[in-house]
Image (cartoon, rainbow, N blue to C red; front, side, top):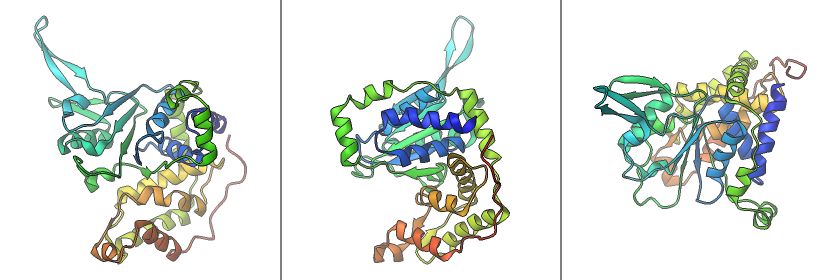
Length: 319
């Protein structure tokens, strides 16, 4: 049942986002794993359309904020206003009170606003005037930032980058996909063609199922060895934290689910390793002077750590 629902969601999103099947699957895996998504890319490649398509396919309440330096924490979290008729302060919800929150160009707002978003992403709670209010469930943040042009931007601190389960880039469409886009309707019109095939309640059930996907002890150890290697690598100044290890485990389980399996294999770890880790590590001076890209460092770690050969594969497809 769940595999058919997942496939239906992917098919609906593909109506709006052409030629980016891998990005769609990676984003959906992060959603199933209960994580948040950071998309680093140039404008106009369909980042907003991707978020809108997922919200329509899964019937999620979504809000979008275009981050600028004058966006205040109260715009995100909400505020309390005195009501004269009742003599009490009444809470007015901010834009974060939704299922899917799109933070467009998150690096263009102030650190104070970024920190306000940080708490909600980690705790799932909005705190205004000392009162905590839980955000709706499911709750997903999809944030974008433009890697080109740093004028007027505030780099996200490592602590906040660590809150994103994956970081990915959509890139420009290939020739065939862009011809289809040029021949067809606008991206916004394509997103409107997406039909609801899943409810928020069903998504929560699917997330619970994904959490129970079987992972053998040897694969747990494989993931931990990979993460530990980032802390000892001569080119890395800041390695992966235990939070990153947990994110990798959850992402691997979700990726196995999307491969129509109820168990994980080492190849699942390889498939998501870059997306989970590349935004979490900080290269040192040696790497920068030698101009060693982060992808090369991570590839070296993957090649150094041997894959487990003894792991339990549960036969049969998912129920």
